[in-house]
Length: 126
Image 1: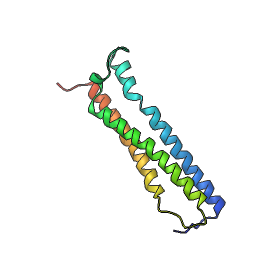
Image 2: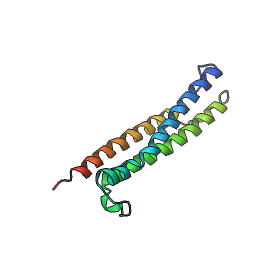
Image 3: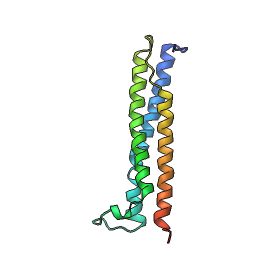
Image 4: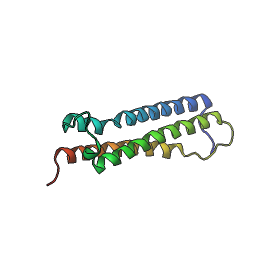
């Protein structure tokens, strides 16, 4: 696949996408603590008490989504760096767009699962 942009524009574009991926990874890392905050602050779980009894399946799936988003943000940044350095050479098939949008979907999915888990924790079904 050949590049149609001049190298300086391509590098600038890829660095902008890398910055967005870094921000997404940082958001996912910060969001990892949200279920703990909900359990401690909204549900009133004591700081010395075990969290396992207060974590529901949606929180666990949210954590999985956040971890996947963090991993994909790192693999995207590695792929983008590789593509920048191999600009004029035959480029490997790294599928950076797929990595980027899967990262975004994982973050959004994790957030949706967190909201669902929070609602389940705050309003348990009888």
